[in-house]
Length: 511
Image 1 (spheres, rainbow, N blue to C red):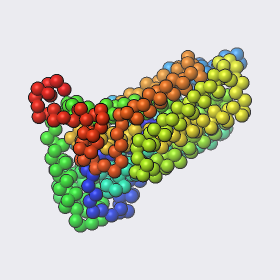
Image 2: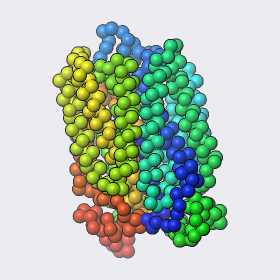
Image 3: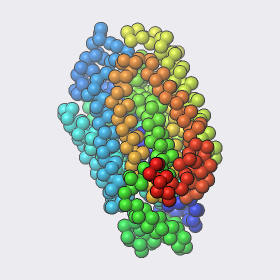
């Protein structure tokens, strides 16, 4: 999944704190940003398989799907405009991310979430009222700006408000909300596709107003985080809010650590240049590779285009939406599995197990489709269709308890404080860039590569599993400020980047 949390806590020490109702309510309201993101991902795939929507905006695709003799199993949705409808959101999010990194810093998390909510509301209005392709794309671009702002501010907010001991679980709450958003979108698409009349797609796109309102109203209700207030010089207000959210009077140790962290972060004059220093290279490589690999599993190709994909595989329109609702439900349940196991089994176990499961699932799908589904002949049959659905679900499940949430959680744990904000922006940028590339290219790739598209993704899954095995260290239960000593200096490969390069000008010149 493209969306995901990205924690930026103040450190690893567990300070005195109660899990107050204020924290729970704040986190649920903030997480509605994830709900919105998931809804956008899920809704676009269903809408693009609705005949009325295609007839109005993409007549060539409609013609290809409805006229006898033009039917092609793999190429029926190959259209750059149709792909742009989906992918324009991620291109806008990619640009908005960098603007949002400054607003979260200068204006605070609360205001940035409010901006995201407003972008979502206006974008939804454009989409639901669209009378031409330009209005549709403008709506998607505005939604993309909302995604960029929400993906920057919401996870920061969650990890700064949450007490340390439940920070990992609350971080995955954002990812869980994304998966719930996808599931709800699938169910709504299933309902609106059965409506008589030509406006089912308008209702599907228009109902995004509900999560958009939740985020907008939620961001007006919540208070800004103590970290954000202190970083902007509002010391007393920051301390008062800290007492309120922790439910205790003795917040001095945590307050002092936030003040110290804020002071250290302010000393970094060029955060992106700092990110390129030799000692930050392992974290940067892992963060960027995890974002790229997360997209090259093929998950978003399946989530964006699930109804289109199942229709391509020979499922009828109803059955295709129904099948994508099943994969949506599997996605939600498996993310809950991740919340339970992430701090028990550890990160590496989940990533390695899922790598094997995803690889095998995609190989089975490749073989079945290669034998039974040619471009102009569909011998898939009911039984084999169900088999493909089972293995798609197996693939989605293993992704949802591994690369989905951990693709975000691990980068959030490994950056030193002075590099964390810039590290987040770079990670979100690469995530959105590759989400855009896959969204823009997938239907054309499906047309040209046919069943081998699953083999293409399987090869990448194999590569990322090897990358995990050799280069991703275990970060479970290790405080953020002890990462260098306990993880990087002991890793067989990355330890070479941890020499005191910064203190040695000659070595630094060679770094």
